[in-house]
Length: 618
Image (cartoon, rainbow, N blue to C red; front, side):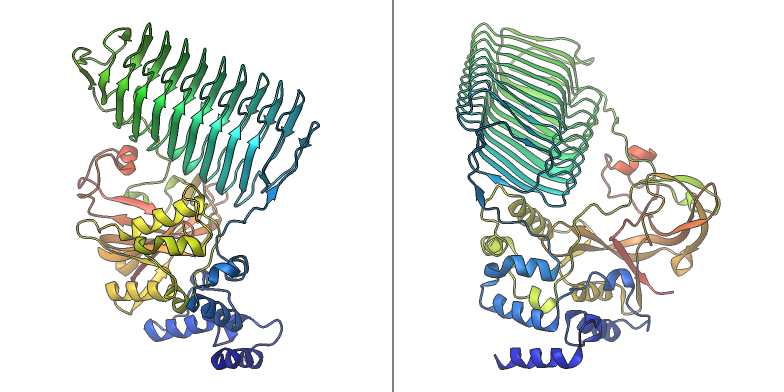
């Protein structure tokens, strides 16, 4: 308590109203400036882009939150802690008991927990327009939505479009409803990190139609889950027109889809087309259904690698008709598994047309299954079917994402990728405070409690789990890595690899992104000699967390970036060229983009916004 009071008194003495907290030596920022001067021998000040990531906490706030961390009671003040420390946290939604017995038209809406929405409604239409659009951290929950309704229509016109880190769930959506229709247009389009859950979707419904027109198109790195979808439904018609198109690293799970349904009619028109590293799981799909019609058109077409798993598809069904047209044609080699396909079915008709490569069928029905348009050399006999063919690299890597070293010459015209940072803005925590927080999978439960992530399906829970798992992953051969949760830790790791005479660099701004640029004056760091560097990349975590690793055999460059028309300087870029690529995967995007293969060429790329590279000073 005495120390805490002393800090409060000193805070008053050091900083008056309006003072920059960096001027107060007791603030985390003030301490960091002194630490930089002590550990870095170049006499250069800390770069503004790095200092800007320092904790904004005042001395009093720092002392108060440190005390709460010591007492393991930081979770009780989480909203205040997140606000003042500039962290990524989700709102704790309070339930809304609004029933909306008459038609409701929400033009603009954001972050709401609807506990009992539209239940037992008779007729009418509820319309949501611009729901959570453009929000950074939308957290939405619908529970008991349109349950037991009759002839009730639901329209979501633009749901969470262009959101950043999205956490949304629908529980008991349209359960036991009769007639009516649900229409989702532009659902989570262009979101960055979606985490979407539909549980008990249209279960026990009668003649209800659900349509998803554009579901998570152009999304990046997230997960979607449909649990108990249309179970025991009667005459339900579900249509996904464009599901996950042009998305990057998306995982989808459909569990108990149309189980025990009667006369179901489901259509996936464009499922996962042109996606990158998709992971899709269909488990217990259409089991024990009666007279179902299931159609997949353009499934995973032009996708890049990934992993698909169909388990127990159409098992014990009656008179089911399943049609796959253009299944995974012309994608870069991935893994597709069909297990228990149509087993025990009666009177089924299953057809595959334009069938892709590297797929394995195990334990599928021997009758009523037709394979047409298989690749040359494919066998369709016996207890399993293995389709093999020439690997085709159709995934289009963003222009300019990778380039050759010879491009870094004055006057070169080249495309520039989107180097903008799409992660939420966060600050580092001071190392003293970080040391008081758990940071391991063995203490994951305590970390979830602090950040209110007890729900294992929540975005925060997944974010904590994934980042910790990546940090604890063994290093690759020849790699030295460390996850750093404070700037002090980043300084220590970089100097341990390179010595104290170091400089940290990043690209100055994001101008030129997604367009053509001209290379101006180019400077090779350390006279353009092959050297080693430490590269640091962001991880998604409540506070700033960077994955830093020592990168041997590289050349680092600085280059003026010019507007190709006016020749005016618009940016100052930092590029790194990897000279030794022998340990890279043959399916790495660089080789898809540039051709060649591991160890045969060098590969260069720009340092993106908020990433950075450390190198020995000239």
